Length: 290
Image (cartoon, rainbow, N blue to C red; front, side, top):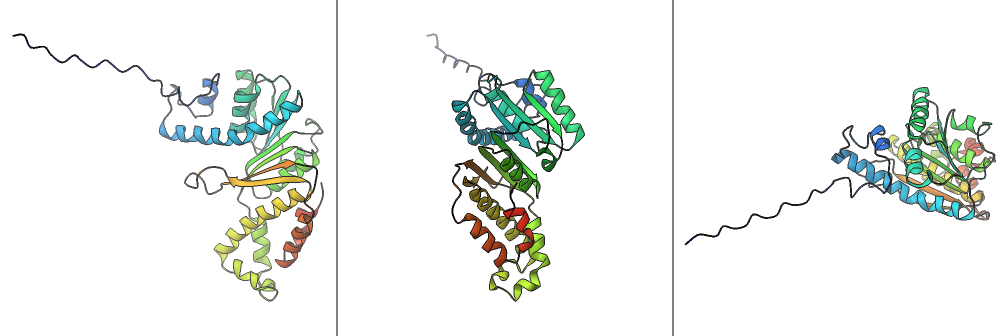
């Protein structure tokens, strides 16, 4: 009797590993240029994680874009400390390339990165992207920028560059501000400089008596002062994590939306903190107006 063999299992259909990751219409060439995809269009584990982080940040910013575009036909976004302009390019590609009234400005001080970004924008046909070689502080008075800006971003802008971005946003009456602060050293340096005086002034000085505590407390305090500053200028502030702590220790995301109504006691609380912690020399930084 002829033995009937087991029929071979049907071959599984080909599954494109990019299909579950890329958004409709997303530029493959852009992702290659940003080194999120390899030159042959592959997505390795490291770049998969990087792309997820980019999408996660975009999930915070997309509602802000939509809010402005629901109210008006134009949109201006300035990205400070743009670096390779990952954020600007991805936002333009995903959300703004079909919005004829939208324009993204990238501010960066490194000549080579500015030129590369300009070349890439031309090559991709991203006509409404402009890149300026300037510091954040210089950009406040740059004639090439509009008098008003809708959204200001500053991701990992080091030390006081984040504060300059806040001043820029206030001067430009930005509707939304998105900040991921990095390397906040100024407040810690002032705490350190006046440490002996503070010991005789307040027992709170124990919080920053040890050098490592001075650094960490200074960084956290800087962001607290920034939030109070924004609230005193009529912004509603949300503070959250950008990504999991396993990806980055510079992980605090501050989103501020202009409400037009200053928090009544924010400025006074800010002033009291500066006095209590012996930081009055920073009055101009946090209490000054643009």
